[in-house]
Image (cartoon, rainbow, N blue to C red):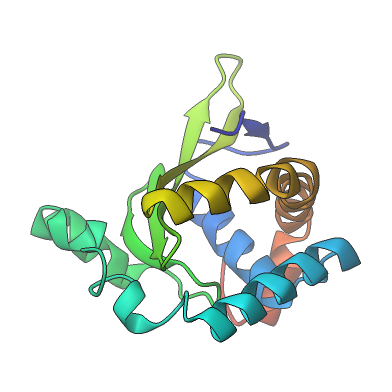
Length: 178
């Protein structure tokens, strides 16, 4: 679980804008070298070792969360703004969304929520719910834990802060509207 990330000048109805800004930032991001290197190594290993094949993913090795939701909730993902990241939409409401991915190592649900802080402000909260795939998945998650906490999550937090600050420019550049 990640602690909340407060954003200035946000309101109760800004969650969809935040999601669009995050997705636009992903599509146009410039990550630090360490983050790019870690992901390049991960994707190369995944390709070489067959970790990311369709048979190892959603609908192959594991059923999608979206397929297990009530139809009206699952249908909300149809209207979500697309993104080029490896996650698949499960559902999206006005104040929360879930996206997922699965491969030979894990089944991961990323839950994003928009929460009132009590002082009239709102913050983005993120939880990564990870189910490792067997012993290999548990070992993999233990191995990458320091990289996630020391490199990936701080970089992601900075990216999301920039996405909110630059949302008008990002969304305009990707033909999205606020």
